[in-house]
Image (cartoon, rainbow, N blue to C red; front, side, top):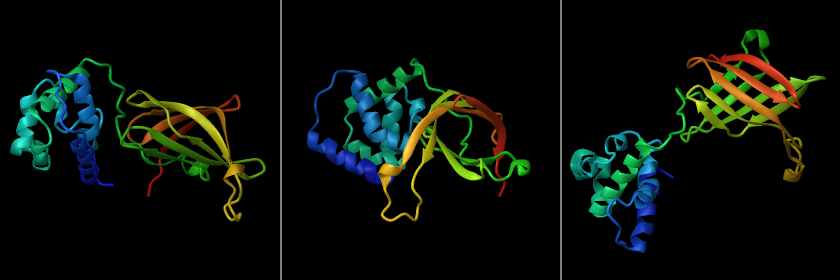
Length: 220
């Protein structure tokens, strides 16, 4: 669903609820409105305008009243009180501790270089900054092995850590495929320490054995 279609669907729901009176600078209402309407385009942490509207409802009104074209339709949806609440919520974020934001988008295929060709790490970094990692490698005697890091936590803009799982299952050509035969077992933790946009150190443990690898983006 596109951002505009998502917003339109949400606004239909809000319209059905009716306009309820809110108290001056109702931060909770502002948070609800932001997460329902604004986050689709501006994300979190708020960017592309909201960060300049903290405690400043006039900045939001100006954007709606012609400063930002895609926001004009909000003029018939949001009340003046709603705008005050959103600005108050944005202001509350400036004093709240924020989770670290990654320095770059690290989505790519990573490897240990030509000297270790044959294994690699696939990283997908979502807009929420959550990273999903898949390690494809081999174990004796030359059997493929798959490990996943389905999520984790940014400890700093360049340091990410999460649980590490071994994944096994039936052959893809098995018919019918039996999802009950898929096994996911946590074997340790994985840590990515990035040194710039294109290089990192990958440290992971499998059943108590720690492995450290220097990795880089795979060139294409």
